[in-house]
Length: 596
Image 1 (cartoon, rainbow, N blue to C red):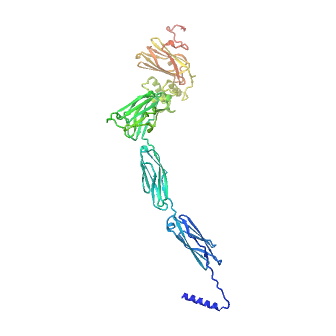
Image 2 (cartoon, rainbow, N blue to C red):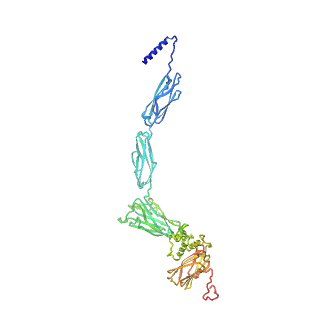
Image 3 (spheres, rainbow, N blue to C red):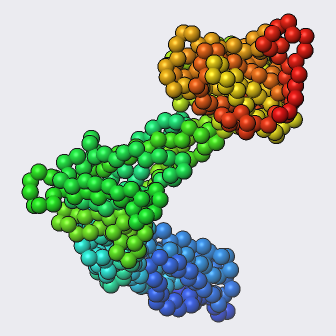
């Protein structure tokens, strides 16, 4: 119907025009022209930017657009007869090489006529290499299992496979994703290693990973000596210990101790890991080296069944015992007890033997030396003689004075001995310490107000007339105390009378008879002092056969004074004279003093 109408209208127009007197030209508009668009090539993952150009010979305004385009493509009409297509391809999926080629259809219109242009885009596959996720470093102790994993993936989702490039001997790899590495290390495997593994996709692209392996050294054998703390004058028990991860059948140890501070007492294997050894011995001053001790142990010397190897474990091989000097000058120091190596060629010193008798040299053993730490008194404990927690009180002074007279009933244990060095001269339990303490107690902690000039020697003289025994001192300084022990040939009896002229002057004199011993303590407890010069300080009646076994002298401010004495009265030259009661006649008005 419509065709017919159109035909009719056209016919009418033709007839009408033919009837006109003047010819009429009817202009028909030209279609826009689109510049040819070549085929486009692009890699996966890249962006395509394509410019379309169109023109119109009539000069009409041109509009540009697209009929077909890939998903995600964007087209802009620039309004000047050009248009721009932008499209970023994917590495996989419908917008990657998998969907190539892609058809593009553009159109250009001037409002009356439309021109269509086509081209295609070829997306070229761009293969990305696979990736390995791996640890940078893996470590384990030798003798332990070393385990780690690596994971691989391909960004293009291509199939991948593992290739081992290099690895230490014994390292096992289980292919898969993740890939698993395992290594049962031996003690001898300690060191640093490198593992290189490669992941390859189906197109040959690959990634390589390097993993550093560190097999840490394990202390298969370790020898150590205890570190302990003791008081001066105590016995120290020091163990030599073995930590072993493999069995041993013997050892050859050499240790050293400081003989100036420590006195060797014993070495024993009872209660140690060598208790069942068939052979255990030691030698002091080994190779004539003072303080060196050789200790040798063998589990089985005759291939018998009595002895037994030391199985893996920890514990002492031998127990050493030392007496620690009570010299308080050593308080606060650490005395080493240590392994010594004096045969670098044979390397027998401090060696072990494995279960087959093969020597394990010192380089294969970890050593740790020990110390005996000698305790020192703190400021709070110094002077706490009775150990009640309160220092420098009257109870301490009473215990201390009794110690000099009755040492068996009031002994000083190592802690008390340490606390007794009150004047801090390095000598504990002296009469000078007692005087120093009394000065502090009497003067409310201020100490003595009398300072000795220092130096000097006190001469001790003996006068023995066969019936009595008298002692004199000649001192250049005032004295604060005196402790004396006299030794008799026979047991003393109750008829022995001890007198001192100092008792009349308020100075304390204490004495006790213990079998054939006489112990005397003279001290000033109320701030007094024993005068300087020549004085008779003790007289013992009904006993004359005595000798000085020990004597201690203290200055008034509580420091030791040296003494010089001899049991021959002719050997002591007096520095002065003393006048006693007229003798033998008390009514004699005068006494003559002269040199013979």
